[in-house]
Length: 89
Image 1: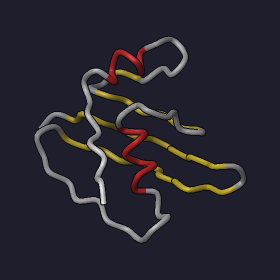
Image 2: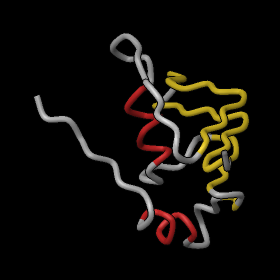
Image 3: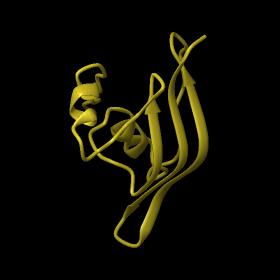
Image 4: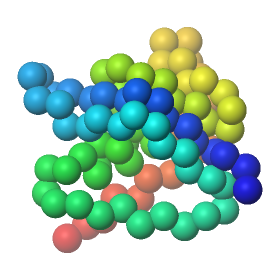
């Protein structure tokens, strides 16, 4: 299967707190994935990164082989290809 996402050395911080620390993650197109973890584990932050809603503090995200450039507008273009459906309690 084709790799749709590739995350390398992803770190995300809110202030001094590191909430996400991923060395290497590959997500294949057409596969189902299950994301679990305790409150505050970074699940929502990861989903926001994958939907191109927020940039990581550091690291690289590739989508369909293309490096996401947060400053030149590629995130806005790619955002039209991805949907994040928020859960309502």
